[in-house]
Image (cartoon, rainbow, N blue to C red; front, side, top):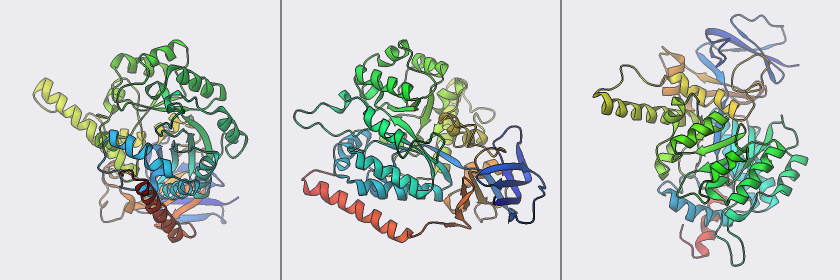
Amino acid sequence: MRRTLIKSATVISMDDAIGDLNTGDVLVEGNRIVDVRPSIDVAADTEIIDGTGRIVIPGLINAHMHTWQTGLRGFAANWTLLEYFRRMHAGLATVFRPEDIHIATLVGALNQINCGTTTLVDWCHNNPTPDHTDAAVRGLIESGIRAAFFHGSPKPEPKPGEPHFSEVPHPRREVERLLAGPLADRDGLVTLGLAILGPHYSTLDVAMHDFRLAGELKLIASMHQGGGPAKTSGGWEKLIEAGLVGAGINIVHGNDLPDDLLDRMVDLGVSFSVTPENEMIQGHGFPITGRLLKRGVRPTIGIDLESVLAGDLFSAARVALSMQRALDNAESRKTSGTIPATTTIPVREALRWITTEGARMLGREHQIGSLTPGKLADLVIINASDLNLVPVHDPVATLVMQTSLANIESVIIGGVWKKRNGRLLVDGLEAKKQSLAQSGRRLVQDIEQQGRAV
């Protein structure tokens, strides 16, 4: 069994029992972390990596991203949420072929690895056929990233005689096909979840069906909450009364949730994924980060849309932290006439949102999210000797407030090097980039040829 020792690094384990090590070692055997402490002695056949001037952290967990939009990077940067619904879901999404989904998902996942993400929640809601779905799953598998493929459903405008998407239950047959096929292993590199409509975007009957389906199959059910008026009035209350809301339910956004409903959701163990930058750009509202923290729970953080913004998870965490500090500072000025005596949210909180909390949301905290012996060897090495990071007084502050893609030196997923010494370890990357660019151009051309505005 291969062994790798990262020696004499600063280790931010995110495990309270291990803590931070100013100078520590991390030993990996096979696909597992087997030891984290200072001065580990190893056998002669162990590969030793000099960690001097490096910070080693758990792999980052991107809790929400529509990876199928990678080929349209930046295209929606000036759209509001209403424009996005009309021009993406009812427009561009309708001309995607399976090969477009494949290359977008593959390159998008590779970029996540490049940025230090080792687990990606791929929220795929442009899969009108099984071929589209299979293309997305194949892209994730080929990338080598650890992923939760959240199977969704497209949202075009209905053609004459077709029901509105809000009236269409999640397709049981497709979910069962995936569970019997490529996503059968519940502990595999790529696993399955459901990206359902939820009561905000579906009828009550559909929401009841979808929640029951997720519960029966023991799958996480994730749903957008927000963006205009709800399709079903009082839907959440009815779902709660039916006993369908609890752990395993994931709310994305949630900006307009009333306090009493948010209280009930928190009490029931619902998890929350915040996409701070996109929420503010497109008009969802202010992220609910602070509202969750006041209730004793933490958010997870997602990128959401590379068609709008960059896929760097450190930046997303920093935006979430900065936005909530700004709101807290403004509230303090309003109530007391001055800013708080000390910061309301320490930087370590933000690092939890993109590591341990992401693992908890996925129900995989026993496997990923921290550098803990026995867990899967998903980790990132940061070059803290880079010009923009020196000197490091507080390594957690350096990570959250100053680290960027340029500093992500190496990435290991399941004990396998995916990026090393600044280079992504993937064959044919230039050809993949060209295929992605061709896909993006064709999508825009196809929708323009139909005479539809983009």
